[in-house]
Image 1: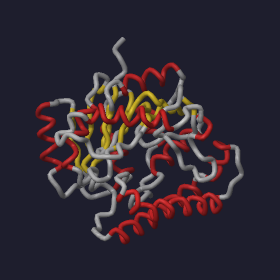
Image 2: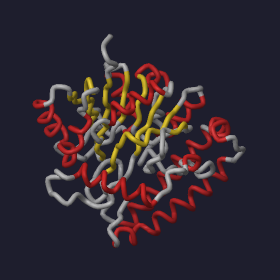
Image 3: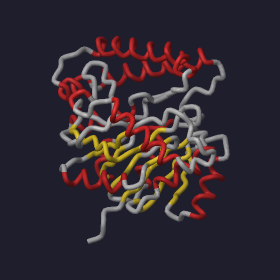
Length: 313
């Protein structure tokens, strides 16, 4: 019997400058194909991906006819995928070696339907301009995080009220959770059944949580695997994407705030019963939204300070 094949799906938009760094990290031994869904980027994304594909035949390039956002791009990738399993990656993050193998092993060992990776943020740009040391630096930051955060906090990976999650923390072992972050392994059959809700707009906040909480509500087992690492590049490098392109900081953050609030409210009202079932709490969408609004407002207010001290998120 042949080994299960994995189709990696990476939506991308206006991040041509990152793709030569990020895309090759998804070409792991378990990857049967890497589907890059270009969400109608106005930059040189096509040229960069086609150049990479010339050297890596497993790369497939698909382009949308308009900028339709992440949920549509992911659904398009699902419809084109040939693998038995799918892994959703990001164009502004790198997948550390061995991560797909770890996710697949955990999926089978735990009888899970979905397994999500740990998603730490690299807080500073890599020291080498060619990013040759990026994996070593990421692992160094992860070890530092392990020393500063106790790993016995499995029960607090997700706040049951705000739904804010800490999927950058290395727990001692895999943990069953109601949802994970955006980079996860799932069977193609289940992904086709659940699908991503294309209502989400702007920054598409909660689009992946929507998919996952609906899967959980349908009885699917979801596991957080801290030993698989999908590391996010710092915002100073990861320009473009779904983030607002305005050069005015205040306008950019206010637009993000508005989009996140509207998407979050849609998510909360749509999935009220599923969230009550997942966390065993009868908390109203309005209560959750109020707590979330306070949290995101604090993040926006503190952003200039983090930027000054070199910890831009």
